[in-house]
Length: 169
Image (tube, rainbow, N blue to C red; front, side, top):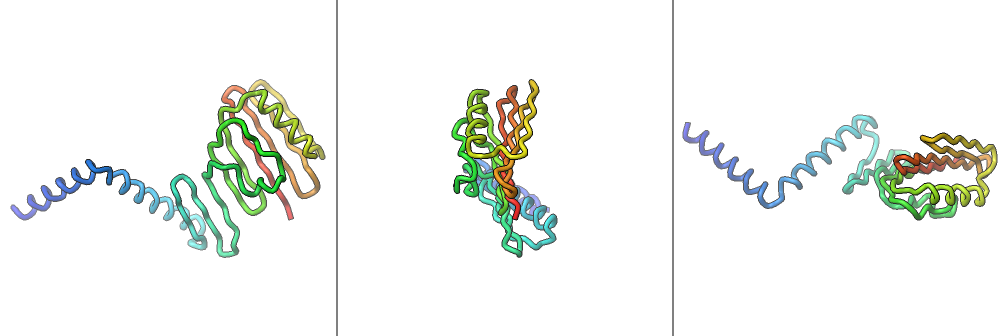
């Protein structure tokens, strides 16, 4: 009996020590990372290499295709001047795949969106264009050529912008 009580007290003391020095957050982060990796592995049938680095998750399949979720930088796939970089607002997250990406931004003012839309059109994204405007949302999609399409969706009330690029082969 005394042995069990001693073990419980020792475990409680250890837990209090870990909690007081910030290790609890680290332990919780590691547990969350392992759970996320487990779910992702199950979803991919275990056929993917998963790397979690902070808020960024990289999933690489056996065929070499890579998906990056959660990056807060302008995607590398877009730095080759496929579309102009949007420099206003704040990037919340981006999803990158080999043939495209999606960037989600906040704190985007209406005038900045209008200027970016003009920049997209000036970059040549005018083929088969679709433009929809309502008080809740402004949407623009168009092709640069038969393989490259851009999609913009701006919500003025929440000041959010989604930019998507798709490149078919």
